[in-house]
Image (cartoon, rainbow, N blue to C red; front, side):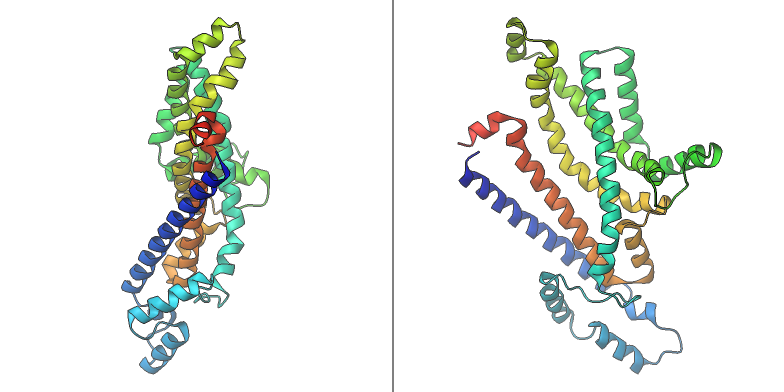
Length: 312
């Protein structure tokens, strides 16, 4: 890929990403303003209307909706979404303090899904109709059909309550992240396995693979240098979607395992009506999904040199 083409693609993806983030945050802002008045969460029945109105002005909730939206956009560009209604700390600081934990869990789940899914998909494709193939396909069906919250509860019951091997929740050590990682990563593992298997089956029957065999190349060389690179393109494509699913799924998984991440924080903010923190969380999550998809797009020429050559 030429330098000009690279920067053109990157600029185009960034503009699309900014538009997506703008639309998502705007929709959440309008929905939050159309829901229950946040002041009602923060006051009691004894609070007078004058005190409520003063609180609305302090929180920036007074004035027409268009005026509030304009102030919100101006502040969002500066990454200033106001202070938390509950702690009075900057909303972005509240989210930033939890982002590391969510990133840690998301990366662990992604690594788990690739480390388990890719080898299983390759072996299942090379040994079709074998017990390994049947096991991999069964794992894929179970992974895609099992709800995250149910799987998490079953893992807690078996490995924590019955066997006592792992903690039921929280964070602090390597043992704490094992069950949330498996729960969150199993769906992505199933998708990676199925796509790798189908891609390898298609590629192994192509002419260039037969030519490589006719030249006397080792089977391991044919698989690693030729077949696998072409089979990974669909996997790379689905990774962008899976990252979004991992982040969305972390909201439930973090709650099940009491994992102190952004997802659990957002559930709490919805309950107490802390809309600045909720908007900050949505902004961070949507930006993370956009960045992940941009990285996936830019990885295509690295995975398949034909794309790089075709861009010249």
